[in-house]
Image 1 (cartoon, rainbow, N blue to C red):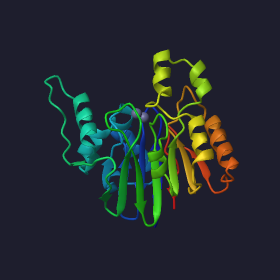
Image 2: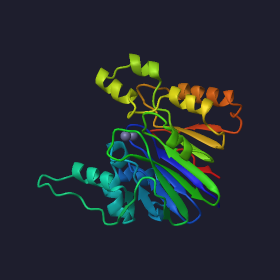
Image 3: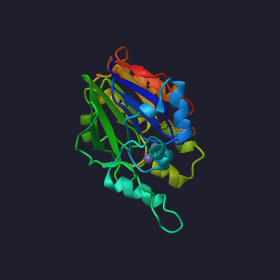
Image 4: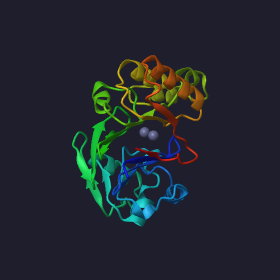
Length: 267
Ligand SMILES: [Zn+2]
Ligand SMILES: [Zn+2]
């Protein structure tokens, strides 16, 4: 049956994806409500109760908004680092300081692989302003999937992890010029542009031109800013960069959307 990747939602209002093999189904981030996650899975013909586990990249709201509800409803293991779990629980304290509990919390550490069913997961550190943010690669049935969003730049270590991916989900957050002249206050612009902010179309294009190994059959542009980017600009920049390397025909470029699930990518 192979491996599939379904982008349920992507952007600053919520991120959620599924990486699945024939017998294991992993939800990567839970940034939309439980109800919306169920709805989008059903729109793809997927049963939410068939999920095996939830993996969390970092504690920002657009990655954990639906986590408490989903964990409670599905009663499946939730994989997070210790620091991320603590930050998440701290943010959800009630008025008496009581923190929410996860029934099945599985702790992982960045840099250390672990297994979920027949999928081998490798979390790696990314530069972002969260307590312990990670990207992931997934391997099953000879297929490798890489997910790297919410990162200010692409350090050599991250580039190394992303080699050999058959599906590459990359942040293409903003167009630098649109961000510069756009509506955000200067402090926010600085945050987004910083080394621990978000990856621009230009930085991603730079990676494609100079460092990318042309291995992916599908490249998914993700976490696009609604204010400071336009899907067609992001696509054009990525395709131009891939074409420069002669790799456009090997790499199909797809755009993940905030408002609806993308047709699953199957390999
Ligand atoms: Zn985010
Ligand atoms: Zn974030």
